[in-house]
Image (cartoon, rainbow, N blue to C red; front, side, top):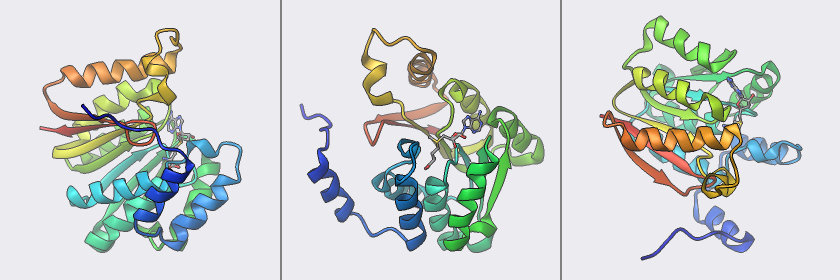
Length: 223
Ligand SMILES: C[S@@+](CC[C@H](N)C(=O)[O-])C[C@H]1O[C@@H](n2cnc3c(N)ncnc32)[C@H](O)[C@@H]1O
């Protein structure tokens, strides 16, 4: 039986070169974010490439992101959505932080996708309910969840109502740097991530794949 391997720096660089080059806006977002202390919050470029392909596979025209930070994952997704659907595409980008959204908007403008990204500022628990109240139920093709881990159950509940059948929800960081498999780790973030994995495994409303991409990406497709 084979298993996912961990990547050293040489192999990580190989993977990066094997993917297509990022757009100039994505590259600037990655490099400038890399100079920040909180840089670990940003997804990797290879995860960005993965998300672009998922967006294409589900023909994403309407998407929701929960957890924007400096905007890399939203930019990657939105580039593909705009290529496919032009200005008919719409990505709702939810984050609590005005500052992060402000930074992200700069990259989105450079990438030519600011016109299809609608920032939604506030606690995403409320923002997602707001999107449902605005009539988005059963219309979302792709949702990426990458915010506070204790919010994942609420994001899942709202996300299932937002997704169309066949739509995909991605939960980031489900490996939590390995903590989820360490019985000594019982903090609330780790417990929340274990709980969402357990819940989705038993939920026959979705098909799932728990993958070891990056820090772990749990994929759920609504039946
Ligand atoms: C891991 S970062 C997101 C990284 C981003 N997807 C990227 O590609 O760079 C998590 C983000 O979630 C946001 N966040 C935390 N709690 C939140 C909440 N309750 N509602 C909305 N956003 C939240 C933080 O402000 C932060 O920007």
